Length: 471
Ligand SMILES: Cc1cc2nc3c(=O)[nH]c(=O)nc-3n(C[C@H](O)[C@H](O)[C@H](O)COP(=O)(O)OP(=O)(O)OC[C@H]3O[C@@H](n4cnc5c(N)ncnc54)[C@H](O)[C@@H]3O)c2cc1C
Image 1 (cartoon, rainbow, N blue to C red):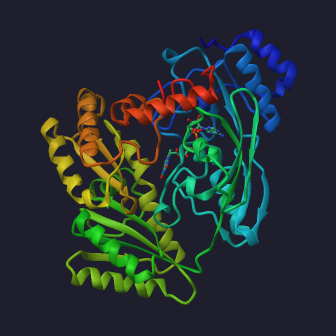
Image 2: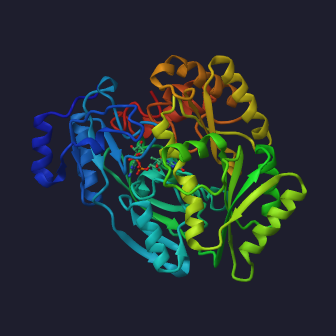
Image 3: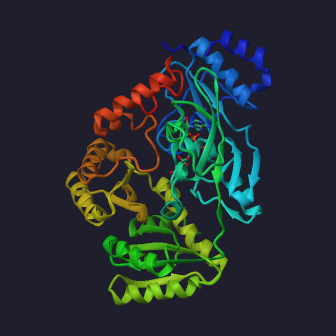
């Protein structure tokens, strides 16, 4: 039975690690980006090194205190935050002070980072050595690599480079009893038994605290080209993706679907963001090529446009002619979440489907939702990965509060339909606390049982992120 943080626990903690280990428990640690959960905490600590993380976890085991590992706080499923009715006041363990790059091996294409480095700072360190760390999310200025690993984050470059799991060669982590797992491997091949690293990746802080990781870098593409092309519909977008891959020798690094609803939200709520077309198209895609020096990305994008137009897939397009224009096109894509926030979603879905089912699912889901309520769907995201953000908004001029009563019915409908199509109700954001019940409903029962057994083996007292992933 877990206990709340007590003054006695804090006294022992500060005696061992000094007063400076504590951080004020301010809003940063108690709010999540969509403000759906108000968090509570007994205290916030920010250890300076792996040994201090270990000391903290040993004490928490002794006092039976729940611990929430905390990166940048940008998680979207409530994994980093616990409401007061979800358990006794936990200790939040922030990795913010463990933010140095331990080493970089350019000839090996490997960078070793502490868990508290922000994703943007890792990208910058790689760039200094003319290398690319390809993980890229709109939250990259705030999220930390420990959080990216813990959630196995995806983002816009998964199509070409894989998700965070694919970019990690090794981890250092502290387990619930304080023991340190030293597995900062730089090896690309290492078949020596169970892959404990991959168990920790995606475990959302429930099996261990990741303190450092060795990460796989890539050569930087010599030439990059970006375009937004107006497509007939999502089926046409998928066909266009096939052409883009053939044309570029699999040099497509991003292929993002934009709906007229989402682009319209940006136009209406963020007028400072440049719109590439006079009228908002119903469907468009942002496509990016990352190519070697010998290939001309603008010429290839033009070819893509021509072939797409001839096949009846594409009707209009803008190809960036400068870095500034490229940034403008990306800015449109990256501001969709901010515009969504301003409009206020009734419910958001982070789903994935087999690519061949996707084009059918999109209108099928919308038609079924319309039977429940006259709401709007903003369907956008990482089309090439089969990953859609399928977010539902109130009718024009109405608030999400006025339509809160349809939230659960719509979520159930969408998740059931996704399941029927062989998809997943959580493509890249994870389970956290918000989707723990969905996991029970949709996971294969044997897989769920094995997950519980793993949790019991690695965290027998249940102190690590209690209530997240597994209830
Ligand atoms: C604007 C915006 C855009 C986003 N876009 C994307 C996207 O494109 N793709 C995507 O996948 N996600 C996206 N996200 C979600 C979020 O950014 C990612 O989930 C990110 O990986 C979380 O990192 P973080 O450091 O903020 O983790 P936090 O939010 O702090 O924590 C997330 C989870 O990881 C655990 N955790 C954190 N650090 C550690 C650690 N060191 N060891 C063990 N467990 C830990 C926490 O306990 C929690 O369960 C977006 C979020 C926002 C706000």
